[in-house]
Amino acid sequence: MSSRRFCRPPSLGQPGFAPPARPRETAPPTAEISARRILALHLPRLVTEGLGPGPVLAWAPRGPRQVVVALDPLAEALGLRLGQTLADAQAMAPEVRAEMQPATTPRRLAFLALWALRFTPLAAVEAPDGLLLDISGVAHLSGSEAALLTRVIEGLARLGHAAQGAIAGHAAAAAALARAGRPGTILAPGQELAALGPLPLSALRLPEEVVAALGRLGLRCIREVLAQPRAPLARRFGARLTMVLDAAAGLTTPPIRPIRPPPEFLAGQDFLEPVTTREVIDAVMARLLAKLCQRLDQAGRGLRELLLRAHRADGGVQEIVLGTGSATRDAAHLARLFRDRLEKLEPGFGFDRMALLATRTEALAASQNGLAPGAAERREALARLLDRLSQRLPVWRLAPRASHWPERAMRRADPFEAIGPMPPPRPRPVRLLRQPSRLEAVALLPDAPPSMIRLHGVLHRIRRAEGPERLSPEWWRDDPNRRMRDYYRVECEDGTRLWLCRAGLPGEEGTAWLQHGWLA
Image (cartoon, rainbow, N blue to C red; front, side):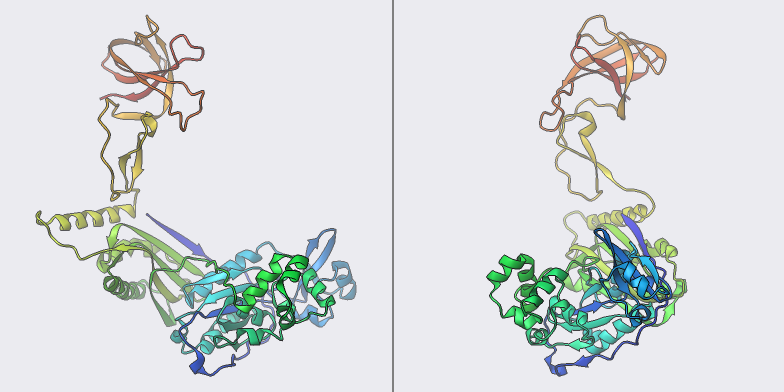
C-alpha cells in the first residue's frame, strides 16, 4: 500500500563554465497568454561535467574507430573538436585526459529531470543532453517566464551543470533555440517559425550524415529546408526528416513523456531557509494537507494515492508514496498515516521545497446516513483502521476466481474491492497446501479410496473415506497433457483428517497420490 523512493545526486566534478546569461525577451510581457509553454534546456557539457577537473575529453567507439564525443572548455581551447578520432586528439594535445563516455550519463539526466520537478509538475528527459519542462500556468509563481528561466539556469549552475534554455509554444522550437546557442530566448505564441528560420540545421536533432547531405545540396538553414517540397525530401532522406521539420514548424506536436506522471491535484511550498527539524516538517505537512484536502473538497474528489516529494538543498529528491483503502480527504487521518513514514526522511542540509501530489483520486460525495443509522460512520472507521494497519503489514481478503481447480479458486483482493457472489459451497479443506505433497498409498480396487498411506515416513491406516470428486483440467489454460484428479476426504485411525487426490486415471502410467490439504 505504500513505498518509498530515494533519488540522490550523482558525484559531480567542478568544471568551469561561464555564468548563465540573463534572459532576453523577444516579445512584450503582454504577449504571454494562457497557452502551452515549454522550457527547453540544453546541457552541452553534461558528459564531461562528471569526469573531474580538465582538460578532459570523452570518447566512444564508432565502428572500428574511437571518436571524441564530448569536450570540456579547456580541451576545446586547445583546438580539439568533436568527431575527430581519439588518436588525432591525443597527438594534438597529449596533456588532455581521455575518458570513455560514462554509462551513467542517462541516469544523471534522469536525476536532473527529477530535480526540475520543483519548478513544474511535468518534466521530461530529451536524450542525450536535454530536458523539457512544461511550464504552462506555473511561470507566474516565479514572477514571470524570464524569472523562472533564470531560476532554473542558476539552480543547474549550483549543481555543477552549464545549461542553455529557451521558452516557446512547442517543444521542438524551444529545444532548437537552446541547442543553437540562443539561450534566454522567450518567444511569444506564433513567433516560433520566424525565429527558427535562420538557425542552422544542426539545431534540429538530425543525423550528422543527413545534415551533411543537405549542406551539399546548398540547404544549410531551417528556412531553406522548410521551403522545399516534402515528398522529394522524404524519398531521399526518409520519413524522420519530415517528422522533425513538421515538429519544428508546429504542424505536429510529439508527446512529452514525463519522468513522473503529472498529479491530479498538487499543494507545495518553497522555503527561503532549508527545513531540517521534524517539528517544522510536521507543521509544513499539516499546512499542505489542509490545502490539498480543501481543493479536493471543492472538486468533489477523494484521495486513493498520495505522494510526498521533498527536494533537498543539495539537489536530491526523496519521495514517499501513501495509499488508502478507500477515497478520503480527511487531513487528520492522512497526517496520522504519514507520522511514521516521515521518520525515514533524510533532510541532510535541509529541504528547500516540499510538495504533496494527489496521483490517484476518486469521486467522493458527501456521506449521508440512510435507513441504518451510523452505517457510513462504521464503514469510514473501518477504512481508517485498515489504512493504519496497511502501513505496517499487508492487508487483503479472499475473493473467488472463475476456476474449479483448487489452487486457482481464490485470490487476494483489496479489502474494499467490490466482490461478486460467492460460488456454491463445496467440501474443501480448512488449510490448502500451496503445493501438493507426494505420498505412498495402497488401494484395494482401482477406483477405491486408499486403505493405507505413508505420509512423511509415517504409516497411517484409513478408517473412513468419501469420494471421489473428479476434477478435469481447464482446457482453455492448462497444458493438454495435464492429468485429471480424483479427490478423497479421508480420516485416519489416529483421527487425522486429510484431503487426498490421485493425479491420473487408475492403472495409468505415472499416476501419483498427493496430499492437498488438511480437513478440520
